[in-house]
Image 1: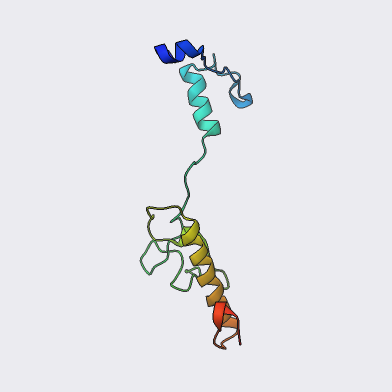
Image 2: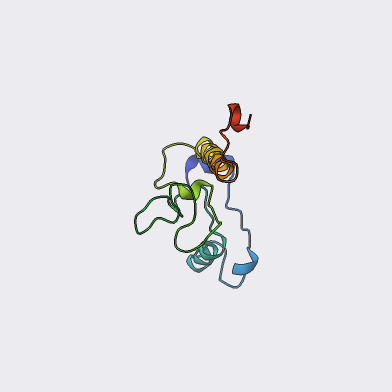
Length: 121
């Protein structure tokens, strides 16, 4: 904020006081910023891989997206089942996981072969 370019624009830091940090000193002080980091930090990325698929000791779901370890009737069908991060937006991959998970559930409860677009018949 102390550069010539910012000075020409007349910029200044916005002294917003966040309620949880109002007693932590002056806005932008080290103590105040530490409080803000503890209270208001959130992710700006696409979380994934927190319940990975596999058969290893850290795997949470099996290859049919069923939760392992004694829980019956529960599946995880989202980006958390990915075993590792991908180098693209998760949207398409999550749609694929959802479609495949839905097909697995249909197969289990309706063993008839699925036709075009997963519809029976």
